[in-house]
Length: 342
Image (cartoon, rainbow, N blue to C red; front, side, top):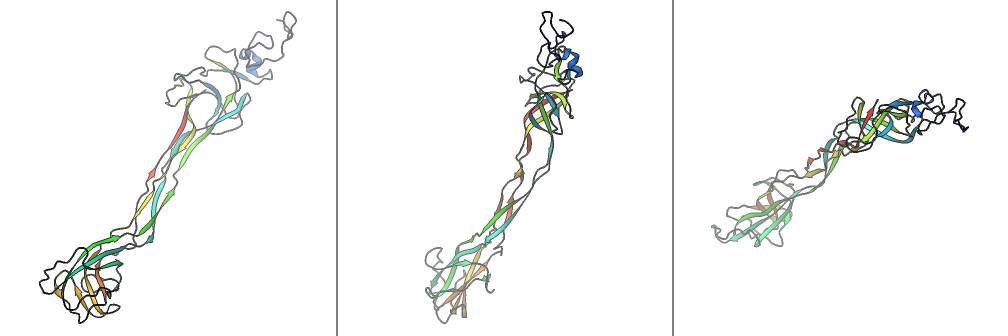
C-alpha cells in the first residue's frame, strides 16, 4: 500500500472509506469504523460509531434488530436509517367506559282475565262456580272506569248475547287472570373512557459495518432526537438489557372497551278480578246487581244487558325498568417488543 491511494501493484483505491461494507476501501489498512474517516465523518459517508448493542439472537430465541428509536415522537429517520419504520406505543393508561340505560315504552301492559259464574235455584248455591267453560265473561283492558264495590270498575261490556237472569242465585270465581305485558325498547348510552399513551417511532438501520471490538457494532450515529437501540420481539418480557436502558413497546393497541347491552322489563300488574256488576240498562246504566264469590240472589228486575268487572291492579301500565349495561373490555398492547438503548 502507498500513501497516494494506490496499491503496490498500481491499482487505484477509493478516496473515501465506505463504512458498512467490511472492506478497506481507501487502502489505509483500516476497515469501516476502524477508519477515522467513518468515526469523524470526514469521508463523506456520514458519522459512524462503535455501539455496545445486542445483536444476533436474544435469550428468547428471537433475532435482534438495530434501530434508531424515539419513544414519544416521529421525526424524519436519520441518515442511513431506512424509511421502513414502525410506529410503537407504550406507557398505556386507560379507564373504563361509563355506561347507562334508558327505556322507551312502546305499548302499555294490561290485565286480562275471566269471571265464571253459576246459576242456582236456591240460596245454598250448591253448583260450584266453574273454573273453565260454563257461563263466563272475559275481560281485557286497563284500570279505567268508576269505583264501586270491591276494587275498581273496569270498562263497560255488552252482555246481550249471554245475559244474567234476574231470577236466580249466583256466585262466581275469577280464573286465568294475568298481566299481558306491553313492550319497551332499551337504549345503551356509552361515554368513552380515557386513553393515554406514548406513540413513538423506530427506524431500521440500512446496514452495519466492521472494525469494532467484540461486543460492539459499527453503526451510523443518530440525529433528530433518535437513540441508538436494538429491538427484539419479546411477548413474555423476558429479555434483559443489562446495563442499557430498557423500553417495553407495542406495535398496536387492542381497545375492546364498551358497554354490555341494556334490557328493559315491565312489572307485573298484580291483576285481580273480585266480582262483576251487572246492569239492566245498556251502556252500564240503570239498576245493577253485584256478584262476588259468595252466593247472593240477583236483585235485577230484568235480565242484564251490560256489565263491568271489579278489578284491582298496581297501576304500573306504562312503566319500564332498566337493567344491565356494565362496562366491559380493556386496552392492551399487541406484539410486545423489548428495546435496549444506549
